[in-house]
Image (cartoon, rainbow, N blue to C red):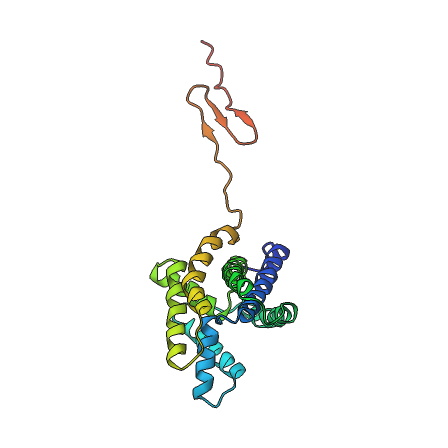
Length: 231
């Protein structure tokens, strides 16, 4: 959707959603109970290639964007903002949330970060300014296949998790829960935060058979009476 339509509202929604997303990723790291499936894949590829973790993340991001082509997805402002804002908010989250938390707190954080992650995806994708690379793959596949966001996201996360695990990436209970639950959480919140333009057309005038008048939403207009026939 063009940026010119409600730009302040939608830009704010985009930035808030991306900031929450990055913060939720930091919470996941601090749980020490497993990272998200894509990080498992990055770690696994890092063990089997000479590329650094960050370089693998960048290369896979480009490859995922190439998968957008047959899905007729196009990068937009939100795609670029995803790269800039998520990294900064993740670093901020790691600085604010301490390490070596107790087990009960870490378990609670797993639940919090899964809900917060799904919510944040719904918020920034719902701004309709362009999704991030992985989220564009999700929405494109859902559109092409006609399947729900919940199912598509879950299958993507499980596929990535399986490949990462086969490549010796670290998998924890938090990783499995994330893969299974983030799709349904995103599906729940997305309709509630998806921006919809006001496209309601004004009501058309309707004639009243009883009175011979036309009903209009703003005024009542009488039809002109026929000329006097002299009878």
